[in-house]
Amino acid sequence: MGSLRYAELGAFLRSRRERIRPEDVGLIAGPRRRVPGLRRDEVAQLAGASVDYYNEIERGAGSQPSEQMLAALARALRLTSDERDYLYRLADRPLPAHGGPESHVHPGMMDLLTRLTTTPAQVVTDLHVTLVQNPLAVALLGDQSVFRGKNASFVHRWFTDADARRIYPEADHDTQSRRFVADLRAAAARRDAKDLQARTLIDDLTARSPEFAALWAQHEVAVRRDDRKRINHPTLGTLEVNCLNLFSEDGRQRLLWFTPALGTDSASKLDLLAVIGTQLSDTSS
Image (tube, rainbow, N blue to C red; front, top):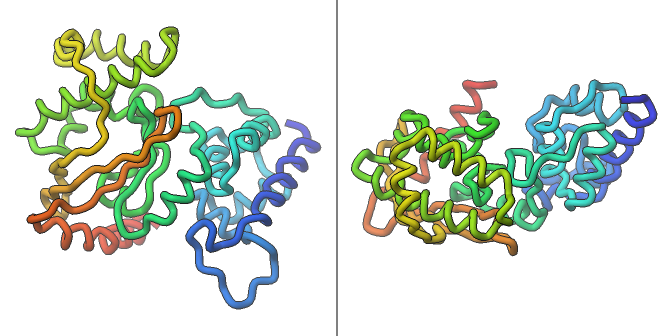
C-alpha cells in the first residue's frame, strides 16, 4: 500500500469523524472542545483500538489496517455502505463477504444500538453471526467478536461445540435446537438459491451433526421474532428474559435486545450487569 493511499485513508477518516457529534454516538461532549466532531481518542475508543494506533492510521504513518479494524472503524464512524466500501479500497483490502463478522451494519441500526444503554443488545445476521454488541450484551453473553470463519455463526457452534450450549439450561436444548434449525431454513429461503454462505453452513452442519441433519429433514420453518428464554450466567445464575427482534429491510440482519421476564427476579440481575461489565473491563485492561 503506497504512501499516497495512506494519506488518502487518513484524510477520509478525519473527514468522517469531524462530521459526527459525540452525542450522536453515545458519548458525552465536554465543555471545552476545540475540534469539530469526534476527537481521535474517541474514535479509537469506539473502534476498540489504541489511541496511538488510530493516530498512526489517520496520519498515514501506520501499517495496513486489518479487515476487522476497518469494520470497527466503519461502525464507529457510522459509514454508509458506499463509504465502507471506499474505506476498504483505500486500505487495499478485499470487500468482506455479506453476512460475515465484518459485514456492514446500517448506520441507523448502529445508532439505535448506541441508544440502548440500559439493556443488553446486539446486531446479528440471519445466519446468527454477531456483528456488534453493546457492553451489557458482552456482560450477559460474552464477547462474540473473537469467533471467525464458520464458528462466527452461533448456530454452527451450537451444533458442533458442546461448550456453546452452556448458555442455556440443558432442559431447553431440544427446544433451542428446533428453533435454530427452523429459523435457519427461513433465512436460507430468503437468500438466493446459489448463496454460498448459507449452503456451506447447512452442508457442513448436516455432515458434522446428526442432530442437525435429523431436524433439517423435518422441514420446519419459523423465523425467530420474539422468544422467552433462560440464559445461564457464570456470576448471576439463570436469567429469564424476553428476546426481542428488529429486522432490517432485507431480513439479513436483526437487532436483538433483552428485557427481564415478568414475574421473575431477572430485572434485578440485569441491573447488576453494568457492574459486572465494568469489573470485566477493569480486569482485562
